[in-house]
Length: 428
Image (cartoon, rainbow, N blue to C red; front, side):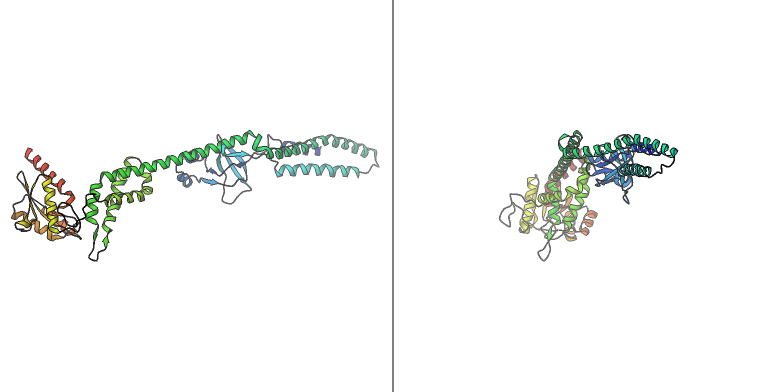
């Protein structure tokens, strides 16, 4: 009875319907502590999205261990698996069912059980042969027990043969797995689809990045004139002949932080702002430092601006800009100065200008001179025009005295605004 009970238990334990399912990973796989997090994180990774938030909130991690994983529970299309033998710091995790495959092999527990049954049968047979036969009752009992043992033997042999056949089948399958296993074909197609989706996601991200850069460049082209003016105002040479870019670099940083980020956010590209910034800064410098093809070889020509032109030619150059805008402009150096370099008039408007061709920032003196000249010439408006930036005290004094501080590239637009402003006041 004991042998029959052990064999029946062995048959029940090693039955395929009752055996615990063992899995292995087909590739490095994403797994999380909850089923929903596993589904969402795999979906995010499949579409090329950032899944770092899942790593922080739901203990998601990339698992590279392709050893044995025992199934604990299942939840639809995900499985709760545990590493065997357990690994410190690696708790049971939920895996996508498509990312794992069953590992069909005979467990050590099953092999130990078979050996135990076989050893018990052998030892019991040997002990039966050593039993004394002095009494007839004992002989009859021994014969009965031997008959029962003989009836159990086919069951044990059947279990043993089943495992041997399974082992042989697994060996043959492993040798032919690349050609005849349909499941392997499914895995190959799945890996191919995964690679294709990853490539498509990378292409989509690369295309979005290029669109981000193109959008930023269009903004820079739109503001090219203003950027060139600011560059001319902020980049200068000091008394030792060294070109100073500090203020221009600060201006670029402010432009990128405010104007560029707002533009990219409007088009939904703010995610790529930091990555696109180096390329956009390079392009911004190219546009801002771009010189007109009309620059002449001569250093001093009142028709063409040059940083080292004669200061008197610079005054004539500004006067020509006003004349092109339809104003009558007189250079006062030809008829007396009194703090004004140019007196311009049009339709009853009178504008007094002080022109400063500097290699450094323009200070308070220019503002004081043109403020006094406005009263002397009875001008309605006054401005300082220069190729250089203005100091903070000069800006403060100009604001108090209502003096405009201009770059010569702004001069024509400025007088047009004056005309429009005056016309609007008259109509009002």
